Length: 591
Image (cartoon, rainbow, N blue to C red; front, top):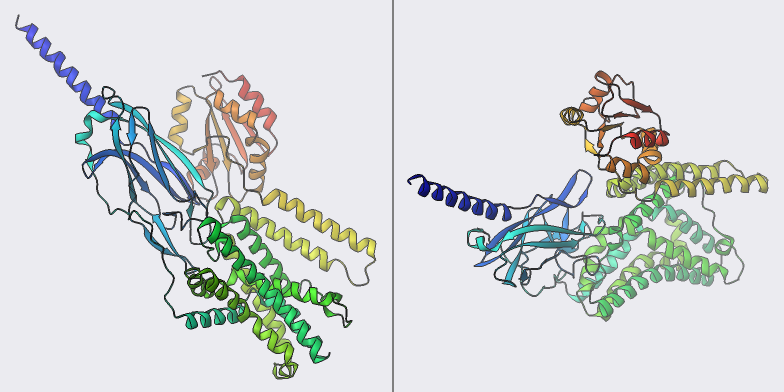
């Protein structure tokens, strides 16, 4: 009889322990999920049941580097909906308004003040009510969306859903959290407080400074040549042509002012100077343009002044060319004008539309004034330094400066695009050399156009091959680990090892020809193959050592398939073995 109470007590203890275990397992925080990343740095988030100010809810814990930031408010984001948004949904619970932490103020190289979240921070989603009181355990889906940026370039917008199962009956024991809460109303970060006349003067000086930007210097020889030619003509025509050039400069800033008006009136946001540099495609395009302009500064090719611009005839075609050249000079100033324009532009956007538009246009006036003066007073050209070898050396020096700026822009691109842009930059330089260096003035037209058409076709083909963003990996590759491989082989699980290296062009070709094939990726998943990416880029990597000492292979690319029941693996060297690999995968037993 004594055993019966003891047995009942034992059953009760087991039942209580099981309930406690279930409650704990239902309230365990989830593993971090990567939201976005750049190169070897990634930003992630995880979920954890928590309490804040007496309310139960879900804590969304963000982790990541400080040089990858999320936009905190709609006003600071590059577009509507790109600010950090956290929403929770569940069948059994109703959630209240998301509680966001206080943001940080990030000042980018443009001088723009942006409200951001970076590094480690927490967002809280409170539970408002329980729909079915008897159902206290349920699944919650938290959706996180937004865009992450560095100080130069923004990554692709993301949207991730993280699930977690919670037991509301255990909410009293959930971890208590606290953080500084962002104010309900988003306050506008105003630009520096200047007097109107001081700010307009600053805008004028900012425009003047654009004329000494390295990005503008490639067209300065054309501009000076144009002014010298005008000086030989009548003063009236010289002045009018100079004003046409200035009109082209003002046209560019008028477009900026117009865009600012449209954004403020229709979208209640401001045009931030340099927002175009948060577009990877624009950054890559400007970098490639600077490479071409550097080749011009090195004398690899020349830019001749069209007859419509340099001609002495009185036709109006020359005025159109002058306007176009002024527009080009203003556009080329963009990559180098971050810090100089930031203060004037920030002040302009904090003012009324008429005053802000005037300030933006005065920046253009500042850039245009020197040309208006030179064309109206040609005698000033006599005081300029005489041309000589110093001018050619100076010009080539500027070419190297342009290459440094181009490298900085390319380095700001996501890693997936950096390599492709670098390859294309080299091929583009070769095509420019073909276009200008393989022909002379006396080359017969058929041969000249044949060479130039080949150069254009080669450049287009290279752009198609290298510039698009790489496709997503179809195969879930695991890092090389000898223990993992041996464990899988012991469990009769097939293993596929791909030995590769970042510097190996044949390896990249093998990826495109074999491992980007959907049919092969599907077979690897269906057959339960452990796919290993063995990186041999560096000599002391484990995969590099194993390639030589364990697998006795001289180099990459090489792929090795270990099939269950076979003593020797199957090896493929080279790039085109997709059909052979597919045949072997089909023969593998299904898991």
